[in-house]
View (cartoon, rainbow, N blue to C red):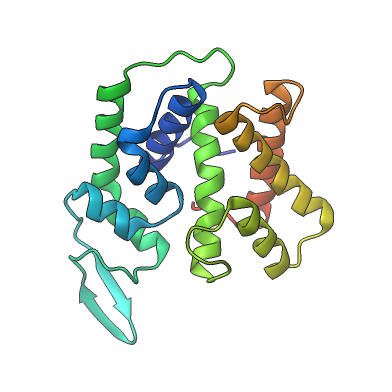
Length: 198
């Protein structure tokens, strides 16, 4: 499992921590939903952070891309969202402050964010599901598209169940350690199958 933390992992991971702590997320719900579901166009439009200099290649042409485009592929959208993500993260921390969680480390929260965002990015880039589809449907579509085995599908769904345990505090696993192991297994499979962001 990689040790570098992307700004999207830190921002989404922190909001997952906020949710698990029982705090109300209504102030940032729209922005959080947009970024968690990989709707970078909507997220950037909501936060309005500055866009980076970027050169893109489309339909045989190379050009300077300095706009927030609705049809950007996910990786370009993620790069463009960097400044907005930093603003969002800082706003969330200013509002909620430091949260102590003795069950799950900040690193694990970041990996939970990376897990969902990576799967959604691959699904979005292949147009496997409709916008706003549940993570369960995203995983089912990926399993079908890439012809994963039943066990591989269950491994990804176990990672999803741990994410749900964090978001909804349902006891999908007997212990937090069991859930963390399920996430680790899911991420290892994603690395093996080239389903990660980096």
